[in-house]
Length: 269
Image (cartoon, rainbow, N blue to C red; front, side, top):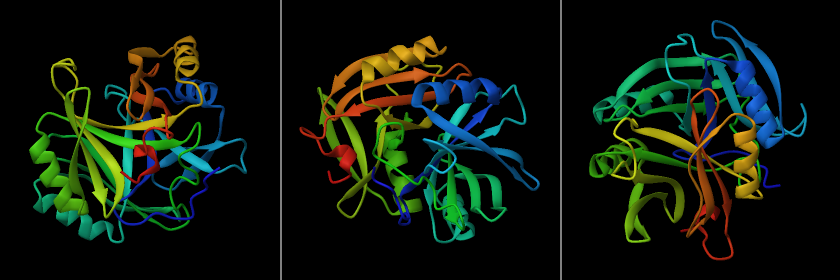
């Protein structure tokens, strides 16, 4: 399994679920991905759930916190590595984004801030102390990609270029144009337009992709655990994927990458 020793600035480093029903979310994700979970009590922030592969000694894959306001929608937040959270927040503001949660030390785990971009899509900044981020990536049941869905692609390209120094590169699948965000020669994230293929009620958002060994079987398993299939399973150039909504309303994507034909999820294109 490709264990991760650390992340460079600008790279996605962690995925965190905010759930109004942690017990239901724990049952769903542990059932879908065979995750184990344990609870940390963080001063001033309450209980925080850590999901791991295998058992308590396994590598960390994601986190979960309870929504303070259960009227808010359940969602995943993607975290991005920075060397200076406070300075990064100032860069977000200068680029037109907002600070939703001021820079905060999370026990001995790291320092974080929650922000939103020009269209209101949430994302987080992370400076690691003891928690580097996900301890494994690009393996079944772990995050292999993160992607932004938004309405104004050009504004998003400019905003994230200013905030993280990402270079935007177009890619075309099935007569539709998408964007890869790159650092050097490495792809770190994607961007898709919220166009006619999406309902008008869908807000701009970041979504994590979780790798699976069999997309169809995993989608069927997810439905059995209470999820809804919003799209797929469907073949695309990088692999076979499906977009799901979990039992508490959070959107996620599962994918079986086809690395023989397309290297997107190996980061090199």
